[in-house]
Structure formats: C-alpha cells, structure tokens
Length: 631
Image (cartoon, one colour):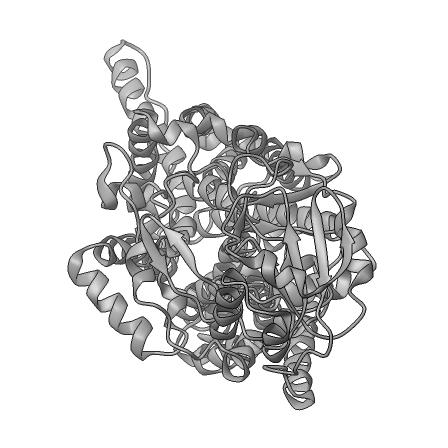
C-alpha cells in the first residue's frame, strides 16, 4: 500500500472509530425507539408509507425503503446500518473535502472529520431521533465535491480554474461529478429536508453552465416526496403555531445566534446532551468558533468554492436566528399558511447543517494557520540566537487572482507532515473539539440504546387480517412505554402494523398545540373519547382499535366503544378490537399508488446508478492526487 493509501485508510479508520464511539450501545440486539426514531422488525408498504395516505408525507421515501427491505433484512438492523453509514460518511466526506479543497495533511483531515462528527448538531439530532436526516447531513461534503468537480470540468480547460480542476479532481471529471452528484442528491433525499440541504450546496457550487441540468437532476431525485405532496395531504397548509413551536432555541449563556453558530439550538430543550445545559456549552462554542475563525482566511483564499461555502454557512446561521425573532416568526407563519409544503421550513435549526462543509474546511485549514503562527514565534527566538537560521515557512505556489490555488507537488505523506508540521496542532484541535462534548460518546450519554418490543406486538400484527384503518388508544402521537425509557417516543403502531394507522399529527411542543393534517383521524379520536358506538367508527373507515395498556394518555369514555367491538387479542401490554364492515375512505386509488411507486423506483434507480457510476470511474479519476503525492 502506498503512503497515500495508508493515509486514507487511517482517516477512514478514525471516522469508523468516532462513529462507533457515538452509536456503540446500538451494536447490541434490539430496536432504536427514541422520540422521533422508530425502528421495528418489519414495516409494511401501506398508503402512508408511499406518502399517499391521510398523513403528511414527512418520511418519504424513508418509510417505503424500510417497508421494501425489512421483509429481507430486519428493520432494526437496517436503521442501525443507515445511521452508522451516514455518520461515517459525514466524517470521511469532510476529510476528503479538506484534502481536495485545502490540500489538508492527514492530521488536518482528522480535524475536519472530528468537527463533522463530534458537534452539537449531531448530538441533538440523534437525541431527537432524526437518524434519516443525518443521511442528508452526511451527503453535504460529497455534494460539494461533486458540484465543484462538475463546474470546473465544464468551465473550460484553458482557464486557470480548468487546469486546477484537473489537478484537484482528475481528468474526465464531468462523468464522475455527475455520478457523484446523482448519488448525493438521492442519498440526501431519504427525507425531504435532507434533499433541500443537498440542493442548496449542490446548486450553489455547480456553476452557471451546469445549473439547469443540476436543477433537473435534483427535481427527479425528489420524485417520491414531490409526487406524494401532490397526491396526498402534503399540499395542505400547516398550522402556523408550528413556526413558534419549532423555532431555534437559545442555549444557556449563548443566545439564539450563538447557539446556532455553535451548531446547536434545537427547539426541543430535552433533546440536548447534559453538557449543553452547563457552562461547557459556552466553552465548547468558543472553541468551535475559534477553530473555525483560524481557518476562514485560508478557505476564502481558495476561490469561488471556499467563498460560496462560507457564505452559505453564514446565511444558514443568520436566517434561523432571524426566524426566531417576532418579525421572522410572522414571516414563517405567512409562508406555512399560504405556500403548500412550506411546513418543511418550520424547524429552522435543521438548516444549520449547511454550515458543516465550511466549518470542516476552516478547521482543517486552522491546523496550518496555527502551525505557521507558532513557527513565526519560534523563528523569532531562533533568529535572536547567534548562528541560527529561521526555519522556512510553508508557501503555496502562486496562482491567478480569483482562481483555486495549485496544489504543492510533494511526494509522500511523511514529507507533507514534515513540511507543514501540522500534527501537533491537529492533535490539539481534536482534543479541544471532543472534550467539551464528551457526553456525545456512547449513545449520547447512554440515551440511545436498543429496546425490545413485547411479543404481543407480533400477535397483533398476525391478527390484523381484514381491511380497515386502525385507531389507537390512548389518544395522542407519543408514548412512554416501560421498555422505551423516560423520553417520549412516537407511537410505533403506524410502522409496525400492516394497515394504515390514523394519526391526528397534533403535537404539543413548548406549550404550543400544533394541529396536524389528519382531519379524519381527529374525528375518529373525538368519537372514541366520547364513547361513540363501533358502528360510528366503521362509518369513518375504522376496522380495528388498538389499546396500548402500558403508556399514559387520555382514553375518555372509550370503554363504551370497546364494549361494542369484538375483542381479537389481549395481553398485559396490548388489546386489539375488530370492527366489522368498515367503510372505505381516504384510500389511495390504484393510479395514485402506481405513480408513487414509480417515483420511488426512479429514486432508487438514480441512487444505485450514481453509486455505480462513481465506483466504476477510472482509478486515476478517483485518486487524482496520487500523481502529485498530495494526501
């Protein structure tokens, strides 16, 4: 193995180590069940999973992917695998971005990977259960690399930028760039928010000549949730109360802007590591921002790519902060009421993820900045000593104004480390980034741990053998089971049962009651709580009622309803009741299902084609830096 190959293996292994330190408890058997994260042994391809049911299509195509694959691979293993791959890809992608954009040494690449993996955004989104959002987060550095490759490949080889492109990305960069961009857009598109994140980075960097085809490509990779929005209930306006409920939150000693700049500030004050409620939040934020500040000048100097990412980072921090002001909240409320699908924007802190690529580049560049500053200090001392010559400072080759710098022609990783001497600075930055957020380790302080469902859930699944939607008691979206820990969790029934489960979508967040899109579900819930006869529920399309015994919540006078239904199964945890002859309501038509299925297949084909195209491109294109030895 060459020295550059060993360096890449070291970076890849380091990212794997950090990933396992974060998700270690999930290595055991069981299922992820924490707040919004719900993994189950098996999911079913219901109308809701395809995004054409009564509920808003917020988990498209994620739910369909799990429904298709879980009969073959256990759903719990699938979710864990996607999460682990996403975290590793985020770290390694940040390292590759730093190597390609700022010619980072191995130590500096490790710093970039550390910042991408070990930060409050990752911790808070894990605690909130947004495992699939982290797939979009992980795609951001790869999207930046692909878009920059396409732009430089289409900008012309006669320009300085075109020549630099060949040095940075290799020849025939256009094919590899489009393959990588396709895979990045599709992978990020596991959720609608992830797709939007990747679109911002990709379309900002891809350049004028490739902009139109890149937009078309992104729209095609959005096919599952765009068609679901058009065919299902996603086009309905969202409750404006959700804007205030999900606005970015100020963390202690930081304020809203400081929290967001430190990659924190999630709306849920309970979904934060313990350390973020102590002065460590301030210390960690100052260290993070100080690290980034040390590299800003170097990243700005690399040209258009660096400047664009820095501007995106600034906007991604400032806009959510403005969105938490009274004027910003008013604007957000107007958007969600008047623009279909704008409810995707109400959790504004999600979009702070866009700062990660720039932050990672700045952290990598900071290693060289600090090293040069230290050498200047030492050289002054050495120059003051008689007979001693100061050590030369590392210099980058000259380049045209406004063009990316030409990478220095060195031959081995050892020579890179010897010339730049960034290893001590890299070790220092890694420890400084990790220590204030030490409770991210081991499942964010043990909060992420696998759970085991009672056997009764499988019994309920086996007994639902007739049509009709499922109504669930107690009322509400969230549960607190004895086996799921102290944090509230989304009811697993919609993902574990073979029939569509009616959900109101109503959330209670920070004192706000946020109304969901499930109008029929709300009517069914009200009928249950007032004890309406089973025939009334049958007229509303309900064929089954599931009573979850071990979780608190309102049940009202539902015992009157249950007395008029047929008991199909009961144990200490669950009871299932059958209602005969339910009406057929809000069921997707075969045409709607066909369109949605085709959209999902198109998305999957693009993902596989992009990954295959990237894997099959020539070795020289995959590792262009080998020609100069830069690692």
